[in-house]
Length: 272
Ligand SMILES: Cc1cc2nc3c(=O)[nH]c(=O)nc-3n(C[C@H](O)[C@H](O)[C@H](O)COP(=O)(O)O)c2cc1C
Image 1 (cartoon, rainbow, N blue to C red):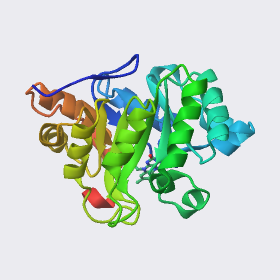
Image 2: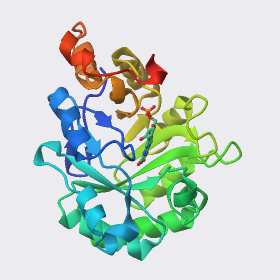
Image 3: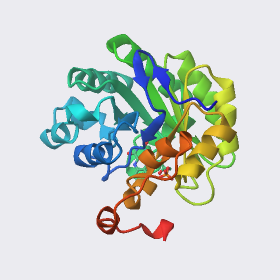
Image 4: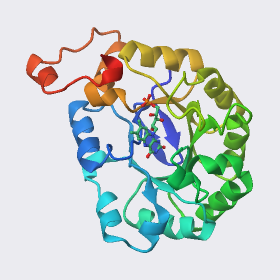
């Protein structure tokens, strides 16, 4: 039997299908739309990455970015930053705003993020990541999680070590996008490495990368052994994918999507 739910601390993730964070895309309107198109079939949504500096200085635009609708719950608010005290300050604000989970971005490849020590750069600075997680533990009562890549580059595929470190510092879930920072979005995500991360820790592990069909999603769950999967880009042209997965896992045929619903969407180039 494939697992169909898991817990992040006290937060039940059911089903174990997550909407991946996508900067500039997964705002509240997008997340709520996906929940509406996939009733009961998305277990967790994650905000776009939010700057701790901007949140901590109570920047107005950033406060608008972190607003969410009640029907999005459970919701993880993803932060990026590099300075432990600042992270803690912003995480406390995010918790007060009602986030169910605080996620630390350890995967963003953008130079404007990594140059300042955040995103994927944290995978090269495990001591800083540990200090950040310790700072979060001090101020949070909601669970905190990390989203990582395979590593920085071919020479440092340290996802297993980083996942162990995060677990040791109290992270309640690890999400893995199995590409290195150097790969950006090229090449194939390494699901074998993601499976090794799953074997290495006791907290739930969620896999991410190149899931584009319902049957492909179930195959990933089966072969990698992860507790859950995340889908990002495929939702752009195929926003019903979660309800299709929910149907396929019950052995049902793909639920019909009306022609009008389909016509309202244009497939993204990587699905064409
Ligand atoms: C446009 C875009 C923006 C993204 N923004 C974020 C982000 O803010 N935080 C994050 O952790 N991952 C981000 N990602 C990575 C995705 O969450 C996901 O791990 C990756 O795209 C692989 O999954 P997919 O093939 O299902 O899209 C982004 C990806 C894309 C394509």
